[in-house]
Length: 249
Length: 249
DNA sequence: TTGAAACATGCTAAAACACGCATAATCAGA
DNA sequence: TCTGATTATGCGTGTTTTAGCATGTTTCAA
Image (cartoon, rainbow over all chains, first blue to last red; front, side, top):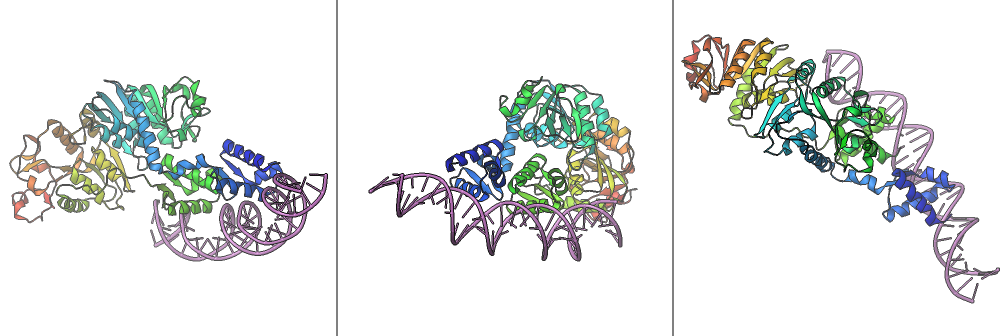
């Protein structure tokens, strides 16, 4: 087997799996690990891959983590916020959960939008109330130290009495098999109550959370009207969701 | 699994949830906690995450309300906060209003105080919940754009159902002739409901608000159990109140 | 104050590595 | 095709990295 042929094979493996193990290549091609190591070293010097202990990983795969991830995630969340804003119409009644994406949204809402917001997040409420044409109503209750949203029976009770046009929820886990999932029982209860209180449901999820599952189920995919991510709707990453009965944004 | 791959996974978890627990990562990836700890330590040294006891948190995760925002008459308000803290005992149930003094108080509460706080102010709630031994319950309702507290009929209704040991209220106007007064009808209604819900009432006022009157009456002086100012109790400025049936602090 | 969890540290085994060297494969020019 | 030069490959040796474990200590929360 020629050297170039071999390196092309390795390159293909890396493009396929984002990484290779020296031992795997060695076994697959029946060559010594030394040879693989030499190949990887050479390819790394040419900038084709990133050499790491035990093998190599794709350059593109590793790239996002070198960048300042704070800015990366934040701009994604601002992109999402811009998409959500298109769903909002005058005189709507909207119910929102918490999370940093929701706070970004609250900041980005145009000042001329006239609407009523219910929210279980005091942080979101405080941002929303800065816009003069919004009516902001906090769903009060016990404040969770970890997530900074109101939870508990009192929240559920209050949610039972209201009906809103649109519910905006952040997803913790989201996949085709399991639908929307979460890891905290209390959170699941609150989210379910929020969904019951809404005519339409929009789920916000950055792409990294897609295709991940948590232990507890919040709702099925068919209850969801909109799925909002930072990706373009025709992104291949979203293909599992494209044929489902929900609008991708 | 490659080390870099593992660290990328941890990084993703941190971006998603703003934090990770060593034990969770260990369980998710089936690796020893030692390895996770070493990874987190290494990543912390590279400045990617902030290491904390039990795991790590995102470097970009900042609590939205920095302590360094200048507050008018701050030192006076901190003095007042110190005096109020002396009124607080373990297992008390306390109801508070809003205002910068109350926020200062919330920050200054000792971490070992074990108590339940009801509050109509989301800002106060968010500060209180940072203390681990406190249970914080927001009285929800329409959020006032100007005063940043919850107001309206729903607040009154909820207050009718609770009974607390101590109510802490900031005064807008306060004088011997007119008692406690305020300028906003809605605020007066909420404050009255708060007073009704409390066994004891403590009024907080910086000295310059003493001997001033607003248009609407909140309550008489004889309903007040404690008057807390930044002045010494025997200050001549307080002499009009010294013979009344309230404790000066 | 106390017990459990998280931690630091040192150690060990295994894996991955670098290096030198011998051998095998490849290539260029006769 | 032959031959020498060049390059590539595999192996042995010793080193470094890694991950898990045992240990004693620190930190945290009840």
